[in-house]
Length: 331
Image (cartoon, rainbow, N blue to C red):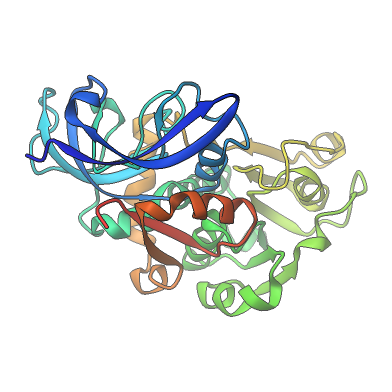
């Protein structure tokens, strides 16, 4: 077994956060139950925030970044897992309180692990990753609330991003009429339409100061943006519709009125992918295995080496990344 291996270490010195590729050993890893050979991780918006230090995502330093990973169990002190098992982790404080997926090996708590569906390779698993898993949680929230295709159109904001692209693919597969909202209309339109979006609208149609109530348009929504965009979506949501909010790419603000809630019975459902219970996680991954079109999935992701993560972290915050980026930690 190789005793030293690569990891992307996020550190802080003189109040400045930096990230660099370093060699670490098994002795450096946390004392957790399951040792995993990591194959892939991803770059999510939260990874961008953590790696650049734009927001204080990392609660301690040094930190191995990466909020998700997929790999193969090498050794386990917990009988629930054995060597050779293919596993994944989303969230659970990786890259915040616990070392994450930007390393060739990692020790993890058994309770964090989900078995990789047989339908997916490890690369495909991370092509879906936390973004796709979050998108699935949003879709399940809409379904559980009773929003069906016949209820009316669904709007997806931040549609060209990781959550947005997968959400469109899933919703379209289930028969919903999807409107995609993006700041890159002409650039992103071919991809968004290929994924199943019926309409593509400019971000500015929603990213503005909304009225307290506007014309009832959406039966439901998947919002990754927050701020005025989410406020506009709420103002336009139909009676007893549901908006699944899972992101803050616009900002953490919500300049909205209570009117949609008290006059139209609109529900704003927060989607937490970080600490969701295992039963909900497993349900999401089981549904993803049924719904994801692997040919479409291949259109929305690229694979990059671990060394490019600092550059990609800045790019995702600047809105330069379309779809998903998978990180091959062994490249």
